[in-house]
Length: 195
Image 1: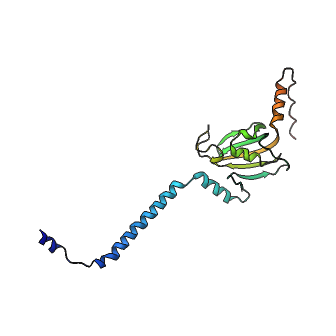
Image 2: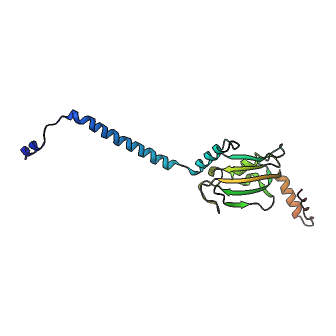
Image 3: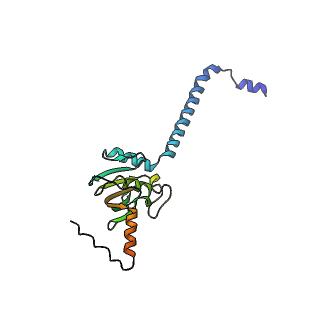
């Protein structure tokens, strides 16, 4: 049997095979590295981050805060003081998903304690002076993150158009509510007609 194997195997030069094997080995390593990089890149693509990066690049009027909240001033407002964590803001708003689906909209000016909303909305309110109207893009980490909330899917960027009508300290609002609910209290005054 040994003699048959020796007859079938002709002598060959190992040095002649080296370049071929080196090329094959490098080719396999390159394909493996590229495939790994492609798979890693696919696994790390965050649609929300991708949307926000494109959004910011698309419109130079969009400002991004250190937290990643994006906003655009639609109407600058009167200037001056801005709400704080101790205030209740009176706002008109519309909340949408990035595909344009409206998930919430105020029917009239709505009071919102600045600290009782998602962190991105709270931060947004504190940027606005009275009379201002802003558009906000709130990343998932400043909203509901990886949890769904009603009609809002997990990992959603929230888009809000917000008009800050007014704001008052929460203590004053609480006192006004107590006075209105007291026995014999007169009904609240009718709002002035819009001009």
